[in-house]
Structure formats: structure tokens, C-alpha cells
Image (cartoon, rainbow, N blue to C red; front, side):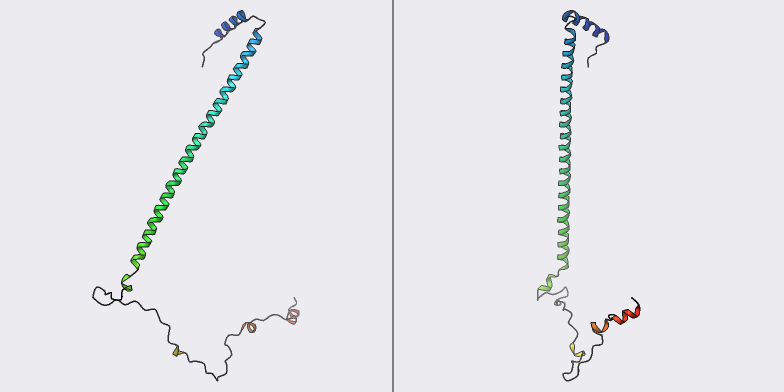
Amino acid sequence: MFDIGWSELVVLGVIALIVVGPKELPALLRTIGRYTGFLKKQASEFRAQFDQAMREAELDQIKKDVQSFKDDITSTVQATTKTLTDEIDSAKRQLEIPELDDPDAHDADGMPIQKPRAASPPPAAAVPPPAADAPAASPAVPNDTQSRHEPSATDTMKSGA
């Protein structure tokens, strides 16, 4: 900052000694040291506040960038969702056959279009109805109590458990 060499400092010291005197010179140097320290402290605080303001400005810029990225991603997702929804609706429309709802509809050959019939259940005549006076047959599959065997006290004693 200042380019002061030793020779200039010696000249300044001799002038200060002549002007102030030897008795007041230590107090003057002490006062100059205090003011110099005060100025350094103020410069350090200013620099710290300036650096903090720069960091906050950088953080604000980063927040703006992140918000911008978020907005871009949101708009892209919304556009993609809309496109997919439109494609799905288009596919649904292509799969629907509106002619089936019209009773007078005809195909390209002029033949009437008929709705496909739902599959009907097989006729019930293949299974004979049970006779009213016939005795009820025992079920082929044993019921739950017949198929389950719980060990009795004697079975437990025999096994040695």
C-alpha cells in the first residue's frame, strides 16, 4: 500500500522527536498504535460484513437457481403427464367401437354389426337334480373334525414327551 522504507521512518522519527519532544513521544506512539489498531479492527469488521453479504448474495443466487430447476422439472413433468394422458385417452377412443351402440350400424360390406354376446353358463340339465326321497350321501371329503387328529394324553405319554 504505502512504500515506506527504513530511511523514511528514521526521518519521520527525528521530526516527531523534535516537534513533540522526548517526554511526550511514548504517549504519542501509544496513541498512534491505538488508532492504528482501531482502524485495523474496523477494516476487519467491514471485510467480514462484506464477505457475509457476498455469501448471502451467492446463497440467494443458488436459491433462485434451485427454484428455476424446480419450476423447469415441474413444467416438464406436467407436460409429460398431459401428453401421456392424451395418449391414453386416444388409445381408449381407438379401442372403443362406437358402431356397437348404434342398432342400425353396418360394416363396410353392408352387413349389420351385432354386439358380441356374453358367454352364457352351461346348461344345468347335465347335472341331475337330487331326489327328494333319496337319503343324503355322506360327503366324499371328510369334514374338519374328521381330518384333524389332536394327540390325546395317552398319545403324549406313549411318545415320551
